[in-house]
Image 1 (cartoon, rainbow, N blue to C red):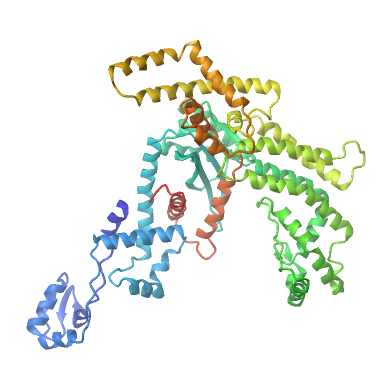
Image 2 (image 1 turned 30 degrees about the vertical axis):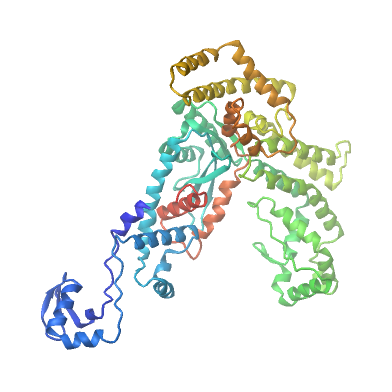
Length: 600
């Protein structure tokens, strides 16, 4: 790490570990021998001091060093071993999210000294400075990496407020690498010092995009459905179009957020039953500790009931509004342990008024059957390790059909299940009208979906879009193949003949055949990335494969940004809240880059 080798040049002066220093007094920037009072400059080195003791105080010198005392000299600042250890130390602190003051912990110092006595741990201030310098160095390397590649990218972004009450904007970048693997990194973690308006978020995102010079290659941004993010999406689209001539950019609304909104809307009908469930669950809730949790004897009784039934003790998870699927997980676990909680209530009359009655349980079971497919959908769409836009066009129509069937539309007085299904269907259907009308190529280039989810009119529009876009990729692929051929006289004329043929009817016919071959082939639950990786080695499919690698990176959800915040909570915590904004930004970005193996 070049940056760290520079940092080690500025390490604090090494500690004076030689026992001879104990026989010198420092007075007025001079050193005086305690035995003969001879004076030396404050800059006098150990070699001179040793020579003095050998000639002037030989008996004391022999006394000190005849007891098999081992003198351990610390590494010089430029020593390769020291630089390597510093590299490992900094990387470990970053990737394991260790506190900087760890290096000043006496037990840790003893541990390191036992491994290598010559290595002296830096101060926490130096660790802080080192991480900032390393971040700036690696950021430049990342810029150069993006300059050398021709990938298109997608972005997910979201805002978060830390425990220090400071807002941050996470910007994650996604692309498919040469090995056909989905890659994502935290591109930036931007401190927010103003209201989180759409225009302010646009300004901050553009600063990052401008630094890395990737504005022309941003294919999409995925955000939640908040009003400020809608403004951000429109504004960013306008700027990318005017400044970078980026006409492909689209704003994608987070599908997981849409599912969560529909669930929240439907659960309002049985709010009382959900509240009772939260308060009874044997966990501590923000709205007040549950009765079981407050009573240690009751809690222990419940554990004994599990033991008698021969089942592992389960503690339900509390649902959190910002944690998708958490309500379903809470309900599902409570339904699974109902037999045990029933026994507990029967043996403790004080719990009966607090426990769910049969009507409550019926409502809870009803909502569970409707939430299950929503939970499965959220899990499937939240991945960033495989393309998800095609899955979105399979999942949403199925869920809408399930909800519509459960809505009892012909019934004037629907059941609780019908009422819940109606509310969820309406919310989901409203958003589906927006979700299904974007990123067509990302859907069609998924061999599991292709054109199957579109009506006839939309299919024709997508075919035209597909042909026009593919024509550009096919031409670039042909020219690339021509550039890779030898420079013989024969190939010179072949190259020009190929370029002339790019506009001929025969070439267009071949392009049409390749697309139709793709559209008509039947694939059943294939691995999307593997499908295109195999075809990328076929010269006929090279252009279409490159097009797929660019367009399949669109993210159906903004979950990657949400996951960054889960990591950030360990970097910024109630017990670790004095890190500077620069260190937080650098630490989190570097951790992401290390984890993605794009830096060493």
